[in-house]
Amino acid sequence: MCCRFSQTYPAESIQRYFSVEHITCELMIPRHEVFPSQRVSAIIMHQSQTRLGLLTWGLVPFWAKERKGPGLINARMETLSEKPSFRESFIKRRCLIIADGYYEWKQPPDKGGKKIRYFFQLPSKEPFAFAGLWDTWRKDHHSCTIITREAVEGIRDIHHRMPAILHPDACHEWLNPENRNPALINSLLLEGCIDTLTFSEGD
Image (cartoon, rainbow, N blue to C red; front, side, top):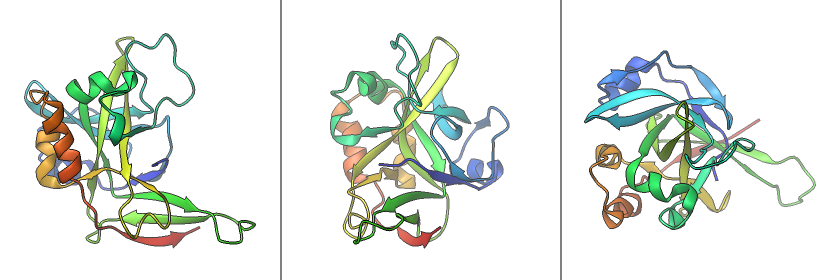
């Protein structure tokens, strides 16, 4: 699960790091703790060009009759092609959600104390991209969700799930709307994710 993360790098750095061709609006950066239902910096591909803009975190499928709560903030990698809420976006509307760290909580062994918060980053502290899906509800509500996977060794001691963080060389193909082959898309998640993270305790 991923329910908090940070976006602190300036737009120009994100544009350069991810080879973005267009920035579509003024980004809300820096933010050291992003919450569900807030707007987040994300990259999509439109008409063969990469575009950096804002999406609301909490996916609302295009077919939903109404918006309920914060929307769907996470999507399990194992069931993307099965769940009606994600199935079409998985094939047609994939995005990169930009971050430079994310938070997770763990209950201490005594279960009576305050949960411990951990902050996860790349060893290099560079920005990275969560694999995400996006959709448009009622023509003007553009929202997204972060894909999660089983946690790797060293992280699963804190939480059994982790966000899918794509290697830089997998990002362009993840965005490619011409790639509609479920097996190839799944292979990007199975083989193109970063496993090595560092973490520290926070308040």
